[in-house]
Length: 220
Image (cartoon, rainbow, N blue to C red; front, side, top):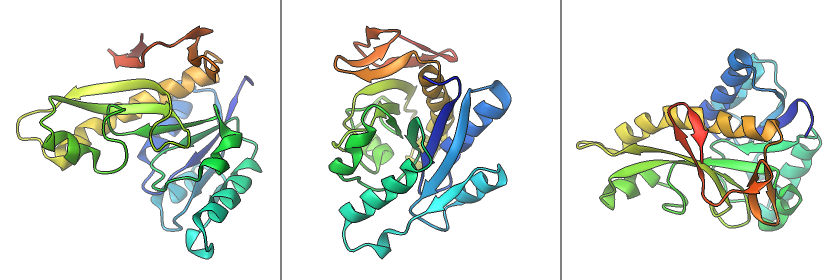
């Protein structure tokens, strides 16, 4: 792993998780170099945030492509040109073609607002509330062709409170996401976390269950 991890970020919206990575880099010395922030939406606020920080940006509109597969290959070709070591999906709201993902195996992570394998896909807060769950959370996982189904690296949990609705639950979870994602990226940047034939490896040992965010750090 290089001394400074080259990161590309892919997002569709406001980019709050990208902002958390940027803050961790600027204030806490997260050893990364942001080589690109890309989006499928020209109006995504994440792009302005990146531009304000002097980070290269790129937009590719899926409406310009007749097929999703063609779009995905074109998108990842352009991202690949920036030569990232790691691609972080931070609120990218599209399902990606499995063949387009293959060259990125072990080099792409995603943050998802549920305790995977629960509630893959959309409306995770609503589904947790409807199910009567007593806890909810966020997961960072390696990306595979299976939607939100790649090996889980780490999770942060919180209790669901009486009176919670989708909005309040999402708002209380977001600060945990903003801590969880930089902590995982820091492990990757340090060369401590990889994906191999035995699954997720931490310090050259298989990770039998996801790391937990507890008291400001990731623990087994």
